[in-house]
Image 1 (cartoon, rainbow, N blue to C red):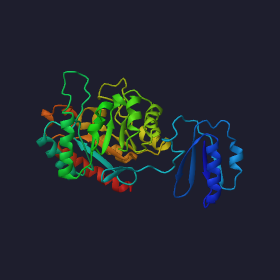
Image 2: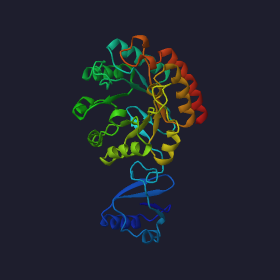
Image 3: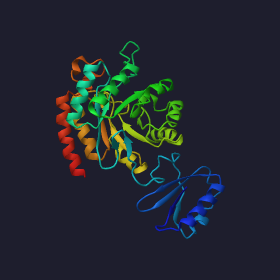
Image 4: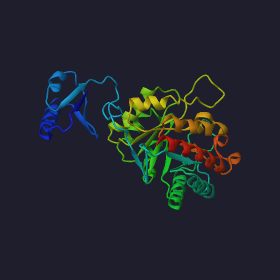
Amino acid sequence: MIVILKQNHDPKQLDELRAWLEEQNVAIQANYGVHSTVLGLIGDTAAIDSDLIEALDIVETVKRVSEPYKKANRKFHPENSVIPVGVTTVGGLDFAVMAGPCSVENREQLCEVAHAVKAGGATILRGGAFKPRTSPYAFQGMRESGIDLLLEAKKQTGLPIVTEIMDISHLDAFADVDCIQVGARNMQNFELLKELGHCNTPILLKRGLSSTIQEWLMSAEYIMAGGNENVILCERGIRTFETATRNTLDLSAVPVIKELSHLPIIIDPSHATGISRYVKPLAIAAAAIGADGIMTEVHNNPAKAMCDGPQSLTPAQFAEMMREIQAIVAVRR
């Protein structure tokens, strides 16, 4: 249930309303927007008389909410959330660009790419330290040493870093990471999501390979229910019958999420297609359709990359793509 208050409401009456609602054993999530104040009631509201609340002088209207996700629901939080990530933000007017290699391979490779993507317009450096791979024989990442190199690249460039967590036991290694990524395979790892809900670090939550939008938002709800409301959604393609690309990028998820949730959403065209020549047009489409940013893979030598070389852009290709994206973002503003 949500309670929308009238503008210029009496603060004393609001305190009385909150006290009465708390006696009904429901949690109250208050959102103080520019144009309205919204109280989201979380819990069993079946016994609460909505007509009684609506009759109060300070109440504009009362609505019952059927969706199972509450904290991620736009009805509870009408204004778009802007998530701080280090010295930058995701959401709002700015277009976030997370770029870097699929996996951290060595100091020279990472630092060269980090400087290149910053020069091209990236706002956040991405790089995999722990790598989930389909084959147990494939490169699994540099693990803690990879995070150390990401922090070194951050020191050199000033770019905040985002990297993927695989297991709760690794959480201590992410203490200095600016944004923790939850990959598609872990989107419904509920024990991991609950643990991440207890930290203050922003979470980049990728959509699962075969997950519906509601399941995706419910995974965000797990994190937010624990107290961490700094969640960024990432559409990275879903599995369909189509084989021309690695996955099928669901661009329609952007307007749907914008309607259902206040959380920012970015697009990952690299993992969606698996083919570098398709990355640019889909990244441009993401900017045009209203996404809050992109995540793309950039490597200084894709042909020799230890992971996902075929979907990685060169620094020159990234810079060319960014020039077109920046033109679109300027029109959007």
